[in-house]
View (cartoon, rainbow, N blue to C red):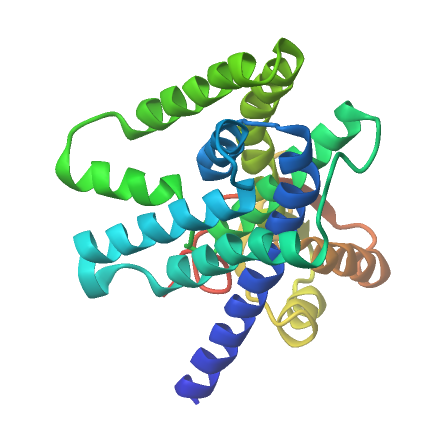
Length: 287
């Protein structure tokens, strides 16, 4: 039984990794590369180098990522994550394959702001999926892992400084407009990743005060397949005995529970709070 659950979990995870990698590759190849948006990371560095060398960004991106991947195995050995390896290979070979089957000789549109939005949003969404599932897309993340192991450098500051240098270099290699677009992309990228992670993990925390908890609890357990905490309380105004039900649900389950409570106990008092940091069985962070 446990092996079957683990197998289903692996299939789900690697399906999500594959889909997210495809989304990232689309964002990089169709929107980032043609517009020379150089807002950090290996792909940004590849764009700058490609402008100085007779080589495509996809090829440089592939070479750097594979080199970093090999460096990761040399430093960490077998402990180097298989998830990161799988994603790095997809993200490395993806742009190179697209260069072969769908060459790009310029941007898709004449709207750089629109393309910047996609160049930020698609890779940021993919990165959020990876981070949320305990993986990464490799690249500069491997550099961060190595720095963390051997130095006491503030990794976040070091990587951000590197990204800033790539953005500044794009001003000289391309033009000021491209550099400013790249700076906007750099500043927006982390915000989009954080916001996406919060939305992926968003759950609804219910505090339900009612007279008869049984039909509500039965619905939570039998229909929604979640659990709840139930305890007795006394109303401060009329000193009536009440029951308080605490439960945490995903968004669609929350809608179903609200409808059910309205049907079986319309007089119940419900307080609903948004939360994106739920750790425990049935949610993230439980092994």
